[in-house]
Image 1 (spheres, one colour):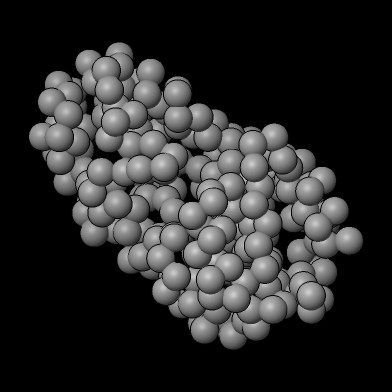
Image 2 (spheres, helix red, strand yellow; image 1 turned 30 degrees about the horizontal axis):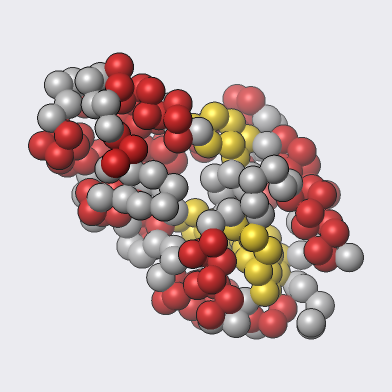
Length: 208
């Protein structure tokens, strides 16, 4: 394997803890008892894919969710339930980024959306450090800004071309097997960060 010069990180359950059950519970309190059938780790109804690719606004998302699930709530309550999935940053993993950002070109590639983005970006400076989260990376990439999302192979190829990255010198770290498979299909080195694995231990071992 060629020496790794570039590392592309996923966000949720890699650098930041998320909890699908907490979100499901929040929607149950709004009267949606089967929210997991619409959105989960391995599947998403089209409205969620549209939100993550920036094709619809937060307001359109809330309206569509009312039509899809029959939830009887205002937009603010729906967005608060939607944000219940967000827990917080993995501070030890962030510390690894701080310690190694001069050793590698670091990038972020997250399937996310404007509602979540507007929560976790200011959360970093409130709870973790007094500098912008995005300053840890040469460049962050978000699906709702790109107009495409993982695991589409072209999304990885877009980043590689834009940043002029050599696949053999680039590592992709993610907790999702389909994303890992797609990244490997375009020639990237991959590290599947499974449940219980941490960047600060398993990435160190991989790179050594």
